[in-house]
Length: 230
Length: 230
DNA sequence: GCAAAAGTGTTATGAGTACACCCATGG
DNA sequence: CCATGGGTGTACTCATAACACTTTTGC
Image 1 (cartoon, protein in one colour):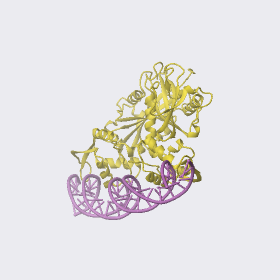
Image 2 (tube, rainbow over the protein chains, first blue to last red; image 1 turned 60 degrees about the vertical axis):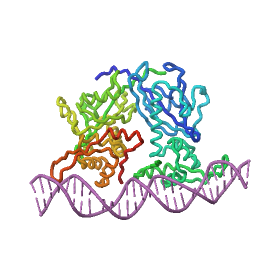
Image 3 (cartoon, rainbow over the protein chains, first blue to last red; image 1 turned 45 degrees about the vertical axis):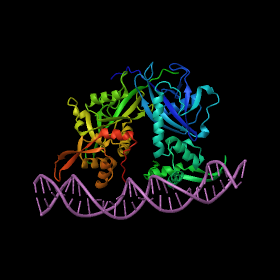
């Protein structure tokens, strides 16, 4: 067995945030060193010897952006020999979501170096990061329909219209409000709070809450979250 | 940036084969070296400097087992610092399927060192390989319902009953033959050949063929393979 | 003619879909 | 009283689910 292997291991994160209708964004950093110095890239970096991959992602996110992540899962591992022009670096990529209240980039960061980019205004990215981003975007679209991850892009309490708009934005489809609400509520994993939000014009909206505990219970008895639309 | 990173990169493959009803098996090798010498493990090994991850998997499978793989996709990357008791070794795991006609282990392999194991007779495995296997098994179950991967576990031409039994075996469920056949045929991705198989007792069966080309065409026009049962 | 597996059609039920009007608030 | 967004019910359509008898072959 050969042991003269020379491959470094890094982690990269595609972190999505949702601000409002048609406003889905991704967190990017501007690279301060070569290669691709000055180019935008996904937050990430080399894994340290004694930390797990998840710890590495969280550390890098915290160091580079100060963001607190609400949902994190492994996405894919990119390992083509030439993906880094200098040394061989393997990237274990992660897929993350943040709620609006965790949207803020840490204060001591140079604002010019960390930014949220609207998903259809992504600059040319370093390495194969565009490919990673594309895969994450696909995953987000696919997963929204069969796992309740949308709630990790909304505040803990939200009006139903936010949820509708989130689905329409990510799936890039019009969805019938009445059917959406009926089906979503039929799962029994969303609770009505007794709060009411009155912002802007129009009738104030009741606030709802995702009941994660209830969802986990149901999952045990082979319940499957599944919300698809034509 | 730290560059004194000391992590090796390996690939491991969970390869499934289907022989007959209730007979789903996994390919394992007996380790010839420490750690875990003499224990059964997933085929795999260190990635070489100039090969891609997929190339590494195929090379290892070919070297260790001589098997030709019919379907291969990345599964998950396991990177806990202590998963290898000696050095830190990251494992990019793959999920593979082989058709019955590619089932044979190569001749010059010591038969005692490479074996197909029935899925519920798996011995205690080296490293965290049981965990990897469990994840692959889950993936197989899940994917069978929304992608036509079952065909990569059957011969190119097969009687419909084989397909039914494959689904029942993997999903561990009884399925109504009439409804299954109706739905499966309704996709229009399975062709009738004019061959007939007459083995064993009972009425001989028509042989069918998966039309991959047709499937790929349909996929473009947002067709989704989806076959679920209660 | 009997055993074994293949082949096939109909009905009932429930989920998905399409669709439009009233309500509460602020200005 | 008007503009704005929130909240709600019904009827139709189509896919799924349940269900049993006939056909072909070997022995």
